Image 1: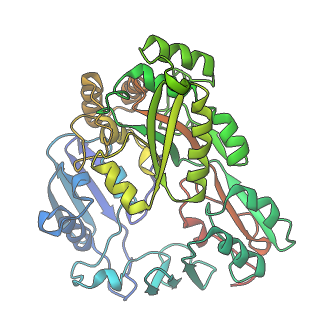
Image 2 (image 1 turned 135 degrees about the vertical axis):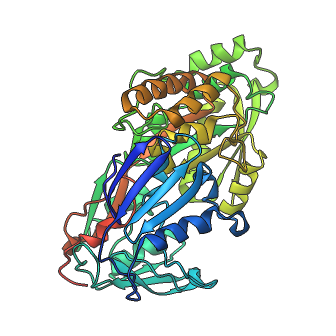
Length: 441
């Protein structure tokens, strides 16, 4: 969770409102053009221009101007201190493109990374080839073909018959032990940072009660879900930050599975059992993905024991995201990928100033103390002081439960045994492909 240089060889903050980056010399784009500070400035100026409607514009809202005084220097001027500024500059968030990129650039992208774009077919495949001019070690792999295979069973069959070399975190856990019985297949696994969670809509009359949310947490046997539905391929989450994060607070309110206590909390909150033993009726929206539906069905069973009748509504991802952004939900089961690895996330997901479309506080959680703390976290440049502020935020969230953090999904890959053990990143990206030394292409 700390930064190292990529295109930026070195950088400094002479004052909290100024970031100075020195761009690596001798880097070339895939079409042979030299990459300079002018390209960096042009990339960020494009994002900052409201006319271009970039979804990344909000992340750069503190930037007032960008200078490129020479070919290797880029200076960002900010309107206020922003301690998480560098998170918005890492490769998974941004890629530097040529200054004169045309309108059709997205169909023929040009970068400066270890692989260059060859072609893509919508909903079918993307093909990249190694970049022999890459400024670090040239990848050993000549060509990578990313195939889009929507069905998990078909993905497993492709691996089994040898028409695919690897997948990552895309198979149902129960199929993996069957696959790795094949002598030419192996599995690599590591703890991950991507968070699965239940999000609550606090505008809802029932879910606006903190006690109800706490009762739902107590009625949820997360350990059983991990053991039986995820085949142990996840780690229980106490909060939104991964446990090995520098700002993670270990001492948080816990909600071990305790259905009897859940019932007592619901009773005290004014939700007695009525006809049929039902205290409360709720709806969970999740994706149509098989694992999400299985988890929904298991929650349905677990919560029934506390007198909660749960209706499941599986939706296509685009519909699910749209409904949740509009606040058209009671409870949602979703996953955060990448965003929850920096303290900036607390403001983005929980500040009352960051309701959609200006952020991801989709449950309309309101807490004046959280608003104040996240304002301080944004501008606090001292990491120890920042950590103390983050600890307080995590303790409040663990009590208020705008989310029930479920687990951090392990990163798991089934692959050709000949590829060796993969050095998988905790975020589940594909950077390890640049370091692979396969026995075949």
